Length: 330
View 1: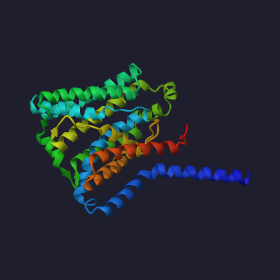
View 2 (view 1 turned 180 degrees about the vertical axis):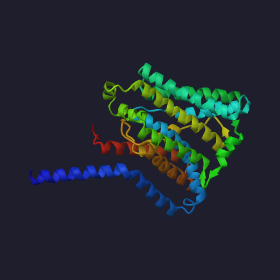
View 3 (view 1 turned 90 degrees about the vertical axis):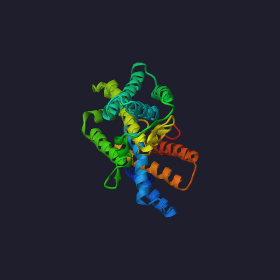
View 4 (view 1 turned 45 degrees about the vertical axis):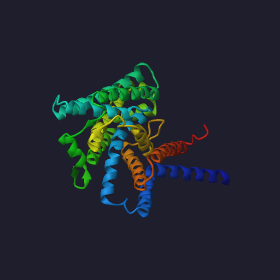
């Protein structure tokens, strides 16, 4: 081997190692740098009340990110989760306000209704071969419309006063808000499922090589259906958390939450092409997004700029994903 060839091989090996380190620890380094910069430039950022507020803010995005990670791992996308958050919140709180059933049954009905919407997404994608982005875009618009019709019947607002929701809003376990505790518990369950169960391994198989998964006997369509139902179920839990946090349900609830969830997933290192990623890193992506939006709020930066920042983060995360695979320009 010539000296030039050896030099090229060394450079390629060095680049591969660098990409591996970025993939493993990049998002954690981003969080540390952001924390340092934000704490130096704002005396309010690194305080216990604000850190608790960040945890509350990221809880909804983090929970949505669990289901979104699974969807993206199979090579799909779910744009309907923000609307499902609104729908589940409307369903369960309408039943609670009207005292139709006990609170826990109303919540269960809301979660089952959410999972049913996920099944609808799966059915459209599997049975009619509709592209996931189109199918979930359609359900996003339809479900939000249905939820707003129900809200219109209730004078466009529902006030949340149930003691269970009040506890979720104000309760703490140690110094950890209950909303964040719920998110952490769900991540522990999700990480266990993805690492230690046949269902988790089949998700990676479907996303990594759908043809090979079919040949190996993996029930691809069933896995897709379960994943979209899981994503919508997580959105249903998001409906509980957002109802508790706001103490009200309005027509604007859930707007753009799907994009925040996608941002968290991609920043966490999950590849949009499917098959590569870890659900445990999605929570780090959610923390990074939450820190940025929280800092912008502290500094009095408009919500319009915050939305622009979220879009910028998505683009940067996608570019990094493409660069890591050497696909730029293809």
